[in-house]
Picture (cartoon, rainbow, N blue to C red):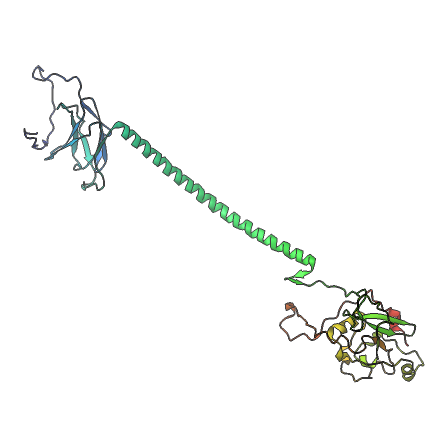
Length: 388
């Protein structure tokens, strides 16, 4: 009920049913264009949007919202071109709500049916605002919302696919990388093994080879002739010119007596023939121009002699000059002549011996390991075993 000043007297708590009478003469004539409301739902919950589409009549429209037993009526004037009104339900729950329309001429239109309300008693609905728009705007809004929902669904699906792919591919990739790293390390180890390299160090066992010329020679005088063997790879200080001929006549030679090499194994020395005394054997040997003991030889030079078949004997290292190893009493070996005239390359510093870490953390290495015997030695085995 509304009075002449527009004030409402509230809504009746009861609903009345209208029936047709015997005459309609008291009713005004029906207008040619009557506004009508079409709601989108037939029941509402608290804070739910209620869409009201209006057709017919004359714009702008006015919406009248009334709830059963409510002391107030809600009037909303829509925009000049708007024909859709969205109402946020703030009516008390467990009640009945109805919407009416009045066009610009003041003509009341066709209202909605009574819609029941339900939900929470808190009708604040923070952030929700009722609004009026055109149908085109509502349609575009619906399209945008559908597109946003589809995009969100695609995003969730893509994220799910990405999570599955990453969860499967990353472990496989890590396994492949580990296999590739292992294969590369194995290939490097095999390649190094083929090249004779272990842990970055060259461990290939090589036979000591005789240089073609320029080496320091030792001459061994046997009963049937003279043979020469290389003592050291260093060039003689008496013949530094590599173009000069390295012949026994052009290189000063030095004889090494057997007494000076008493710590060498007698396996290469020729034994005295039966019936020949040690004194006669020693008289037939030439005198050494100068003697040099094993202490003046470097480890490299000693190993060079070993490579030629002259094996030192560690058990006789401390024998005095002129003494023979056990079992060689009465026997003397032929003297050997070596160059240079004064020293065995005294300019060469002390040898640096590197011990591999596999040998353990022992003391300092004082002796090189025995070298491989040179099968191409220039010293004939027969000459080494002959007596002078």
